[in-house]
Image 1 (cartoon, rainbow, N blue to C red):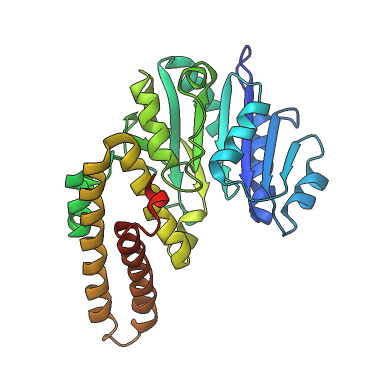
Image 2 (cartoon, rainbow, N blue to C red):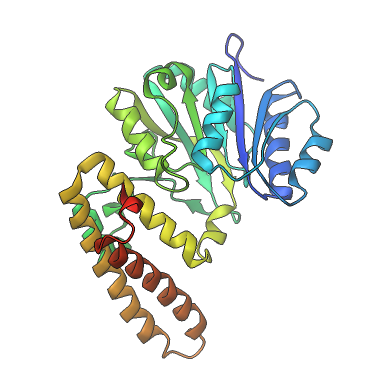
Length: 314
């Protein structure tokens, strides 16, 4: 099935993914055509049955079991260090390949040697399109997001997902990385425990002269988008912390402060919208959840501004 002369490694970072992990691994072996693919699972101290199930079903897979949750970036880097392939496939544990997609991705990377990082078309569980590519963050786009203008004009935030081409950012649901590019760019920045590492990595590939490409002729299904909207406030705040760390790393202190101000206004507007939405019968519960998340972000930004936790945006 796969072209000769190229080696591939598949890396999955797992944390309590349950049956999703087994399904992801099964789709890789099915698409590869045998159980001889180099498949590496890095487990971040899961306490469910995902690792025993994976070990029992796929004994030839390599399992790296951490004693604590080291985060996504450190987990990926551990997998990259153990992998030997020319092409490195980084697969979320709640994602799986659709038939024929692996072969097409390999052929695409063979035909586009300047592509250092590639992402296939990502679909939700119901096979609707999941936006997995987006524009690089700017203050203008942050203002558009705060005012919900990107909901009216999606092109402000997202490129055209109907065509193959270069993009600014690829989400980490499914990446294909060229070994030669990785040698120049390096692994994920482990300062990002979770979130924003995809924005940072995509930018670094582009800065090193490698193309970051979205490829529509190969598809994967990613279940994660549905659960993220119900993420606890703590994880929502972690996303904003990661955003600010990205801004500080790539833009410096003054733009980071400006972004933090826009972010504060954004969430003040969301609190106001939530209060109004809560007046509508049947919407009170979801409105309260959104209000709690936005209040948590505002609280963290205010505390950081007064110097109580300056390390959060370093």
